[in-house]
Length: 92
Image (cartoon, rainbow, N blue to C red; front, side):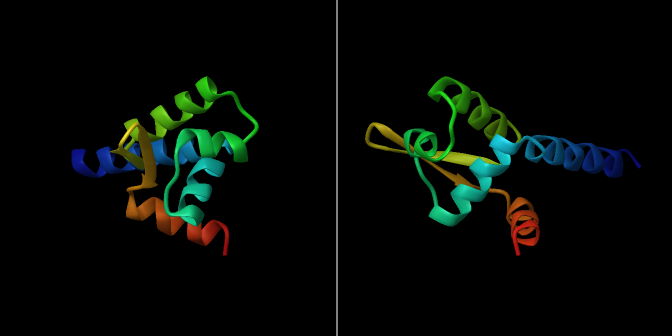
């Protein structure tokens, strides 16, 4: 029973994160671009880089996205298959 509760809480946290319009836009954008930097995200989303970085940090902490350093840049991609399914269903 504890495992089921943990899964429910984890899924609720994911839905809470995706309920924020900026974070939902970030995840949707990452799926359509196959990954991008915070600077690129900033050009698509009307937020300061520091605000955007906070949203990216939240998504990373929940395991929704991951970053891969390439030189001086970090390329972010969606890393959670369940979230990919959710986004695809939402925007079909």
